[in-house]
Image (cartoon, rainbow, N blue to C red; front, side, top):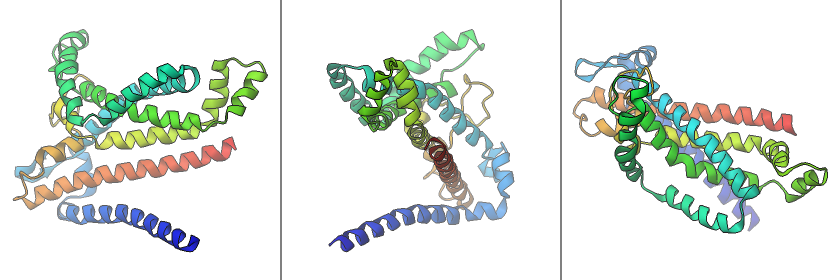
Length: 290
């Protein structure tokens, strides 16, 4: 029975890995027509996007994706980390009973709800209240709006992951620190965070991977302007928004379809490389801490 269970789990693990490989191969073959006509360097370094003239420059979409993801993590990470620390180390049970359901509701909301919230609240706030202090004019449909909406979307995920990571630390380590005269904050900083630092990095990487692929909410507030944004008050056009906006309309143009599949391949490769590099960093950190 044990041998059967082991074989079954091993098979399912291999199938999971094969899914990733098959997806990558499928995207590559779908992208082959445009890769045979344009060099990889030309595609990712050019900013000219004129499909009708056969010009496919992905640089504005890559930069837009990185901008939005960076702002989302910059906003969500400190809030999530401090929230998780408060809930695991300081909060009373009654507070946890109120906060956890709220986080579950946030995590369960469809992305289109976040998009509508962004249009009704974030976009007007940026356009009328915030942007006038920095630029002459902004429509509100900006890099900042997309980053804020995306940051709020990944907030529940990050908080949940951080809470799980902090919960792994044995209570004995905390008690030993308190017995030596350390305060609660000193114990949190020197024991809990230090012990779970690798887990914090892994959780953040998972959230970044999730942020890279968010589509509808970002699409609704980013402005969808094909240009490289010079500041956070300009519009952008992330890769997921490009695919969602155009796929299905231009299938009669094989090269255009191939370009969209290449956009998906870029997203796939970026997430894959990011996760591999993070695993290498995590492995080295764990060796150093242990």
